[in-house]
Image (cartoon, rainbow, N blue to C red):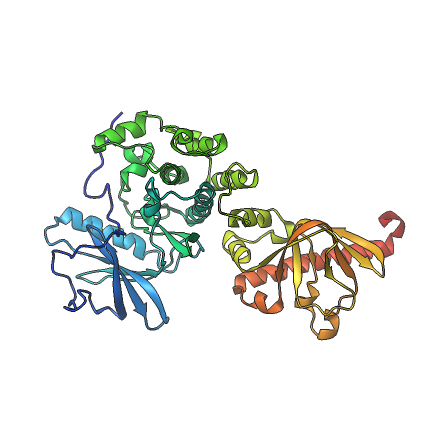
Length: 472
């Protein structure tokens, strides 16, 4: 089997994390001779150059209207480019421009604006300060295994969201995964660069065989019809690279890499990296299967498999001592309380909630306390005591103290019962003030969840009054 990848778009240009070189062609706007930067691009004041590739430059700029920094990717027209190459550049720009304001996910870079300038079109995007994952693909700079799995989980959730919008990324690679740092730890990862995106709902002819060769699936090389499993292959190749310090297939010539993608088996991760469990290796190998039917069926299955690696302790924690976001997300997704919450809203809860662990016998509330916080039990059990008598046992998914949020006046915020931890528990907590910091969509979902809780409690109270023997 053979296939050819047609230039110029088999390797789309990406901003480089290395010190950029000066462009050889004259720029489309006036340059500042002191800083060698354009002072402005449109209404945006340019602060620095973040990187450049063969066809684009990326700048750090300031948006005076939003009052925040943004990243601007400007197409750099090649005066020597033929009509075909110029056509591809325009189509890549149009693909991203069509997504302005459309993608809203915590792990997807937002595209804020697009300006089709006749000399140098540009995109305005959310600025992510920590660079890309490419720096962690070297053997001397590898991330801890648990961090790689956590990164993979968040990317899988993001790409699953993208697919639900009718899009296939087609260029998932380390240079297109931006990170935000917290000290020396990765705090966030965001998928970027949608120039190669395949829009399944588009009504015009789209370019095939785009992407980056080292991470392309066999069907993508063939120019075949794609689904989400093409991106699953690409993310699996990225995770392999992050784990091993080398891509799954490597050769000097493109034809050599292509032959390996079609015919070769990737080297064993367990031999390339100490600590790789059989379960982790099997997950990556399945994602890299030659036939898409042999890969994970969809993003939900892929993300769940990554989450299970963490929950079942198939990856060593290393320096990560706390609970990972993937564990928290999976915990909340399994609770009835959060039924109907979308991924975006659930991620917001994961990040905004106060997570607490409680030991056996600890008191959450005592009778007479004034409530200023409500809890949702995510693990363990609490017991409710009224005047010293046990009234109820509540497990994962139960909420307690929600009158602090729902009560119309202070008198109703005084607790009438004692709530004690009967099994070591984990909870998330909000106050009325912290809940107000959530988006309107998420707060509306909380309101709906509380209504369901109150309806169930009213029904139970009615049953207790109407059929006391049956209840007892």
